[in-house]
Image 1 (cartoon, rainbow, N blue to C red):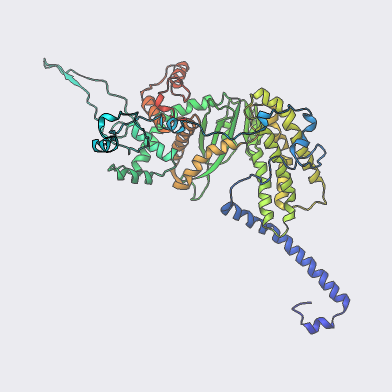
Image 2: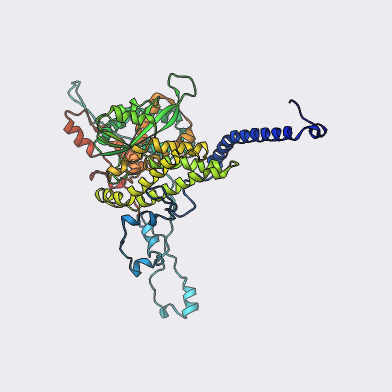
Amino acid sequence: MSGNLTAEQLNELSKETLVSMTLSMQEQLNTLNSRLDYPTGQIALANSNRFGRHTEKLSQISGQGCFDEDGEIYFNEAEAIHDTDPDPEEPTVETAVKKRTPRPKGKKEQDLGQFDVYVLPTIDVPEEELIRVFGSPDNCRRMPDEVMQRLAYIPAGWRVEETHIAVYRSRNGEAKFVKGKAPAYLLRGNIVTPSLEAAIINAKYGNAQPYRRIEKDFRQNGVCISEQNMASWTIKCAERYLSRFYNYLHALIREYHVLQADETTVEVVKDGRKAGCKSYMWIYRTGEYYGDRPIVLYEYQKTRNHEHPLNFLEGFNGYLVCDGFPGYKTLSRKAEGITIAECWSHLRRKFTDAVKAADGSKHPAQGQIAEDALQMIAAIFHAEGKLKDMSPRDRQRKRKIKVRPLIDAFFTWVHKIADDKSILMSQDTYDGIRYAINQEEHLRVFLQDGEVPMHNNCAERTIRGFTVGRRNWMTIDTISGATASAVIYSLVETARANNLHIYHYMEYLLTELPKLREFASTEEETKAMERLLPWSEELPEICHKRGR
C-alpha cells in the first residue's frame, strides 16, 4: 500500500489489516530509532569533547562498584578486598581525627626569600608629629622598624657585547702577526649570543609563543629581529650544537629499565608531499617512577610506521608503556627484550566516551555497563594510587595483594558481559569491552614489575607542551625545522622534568657546547657530556629553579 491513507479509508479497513499495519510501523520505528542512537550518541560525545569538561573523574567516591572474582558487584572496595587483608591495622585516635592544617608561619618570607632585597629609604616620623604626641623628641625612643615587603617587576634589558681581540705585529718589518684567542661563537658573523638564543628558545619552546609574537615583543623594546632570522638561528644552533647533546641523551635513555612512549600529529608544509598530509612527533621518556633523573626525547617522522620506534629504541631492553596503537605490538614482536605494558587510562577513556554518548541518546540505560566498568577501573586506580610512594619492590608486593584481585575480578566481569548475548549495549560500550579483552595481556603487564606504571599519563602530560605550542604556530615549514624542533623540545622538556630554569639551562648549553671539539674517544665524550646533564653536580646554581 503506497501513499497516505485518509481517516475514511482507515475506517473501511479490517481489524486484521490495521493490526498488521501497526506492527509493521512499530518495527520500522524501532529500526529507525536504533539507527539514530549511534549518530545521536556521537553528536553528544563530540559536544562533550568540545564544550564539556575534559575529565574522566567520576562524581562518585573512588572505589564504588567493585566486583568479586565471579563478577558479582559489591558496594565498595573494602568488601572486594576483605579476604586479602582481613585484619588491617587499627588507626589511633590521633590519626583518625583529622585536624585542620594551620597556615604555615613565615610563608611570605619563604616565597620572597629567593630574591635580592632592595631597601627603600626609611619613612620617618616628622619632628612636629613627635612633639604633638610626646611633647618633645626626648620623651620617646625609637622602636624596631615596621617592615613591609612587596614584589617588584624589572623589565628585561638589552646590551651590546663588544669583544676586543688584541693584535700584534712585528716592528722590524717582518710580516708576523699574533692575536688573542677568539672566544667560541655560536654563529660567526651573526649578532646572536647564547643569552639571546636561549631567550628565543624559552619563549617559543618553553612558553609556546610563535616567532611572530616573539618578534613583536622584541620590537616593543626597540630590537628589530625578524622571525626568519630567529628561525634560522634556532635551526643552525640545533644542528651544530644541541643535536650532539641530544644524541648523548638518546644513548643514555636506552639504558633505563622502563620507558614510556606516545605520539601526536604535526603538519610540515614542505615535506615533499601534498598539503595537509600528517606527520608525527614521537615522544619517549623515562618511566614515571624515575623522578630523580628523567629524560624526555622527541623524534620527528613523516609517518606512524612501527619501524620508527623500532629504530629509535634499538638496543633497549625493558618495558615500554604506551597506548593500544598496533605498531607498538609489532615492535614487541620484532625487538627482543621489549615488553609492552598498555595504559589503563586509555581503557578508561573508552568507557568514559561510552557514558558521555549514552547521556545524549534516547536510551541512556545502555550506558549502565560502561558506568559499571568505570566504577571498577576507579577502584583499581584508587588501590594503585596508595602505592605511589613505595619502593619498586614493596609496590610489586602490595600490587599482588591489593591490585591483582581487583584486576582479576574486572576481567572476569568483562568476559561474562561479552559472553552474555542477551545484554543490550551501545556500540561505544561494546568497543570498550572488546578493547579490554583484546588488550588484557598487555594491561596486566604492569603487575610484573614495581617500576612499571599502570598508565601512560606521564608521557601524555609531557607531550602537552608540544600540543599547546602547535595550537599557536599551527604548522612547521620544513623538515629541518621539524627535526630541530624535536631536538629543542627534548632539551626543554628534559630541563622542565628536572625542575631546571629553562632559560638559564639553555644558555649554559649554548655557551658550553660550542667549546667542545671532536672527541678522541668515547670516554672523553662521556666525561664532557656528563658535565652538561641536568643532574650534574657541576651545573651552575643559577640553572636550578629557586624557590620552594
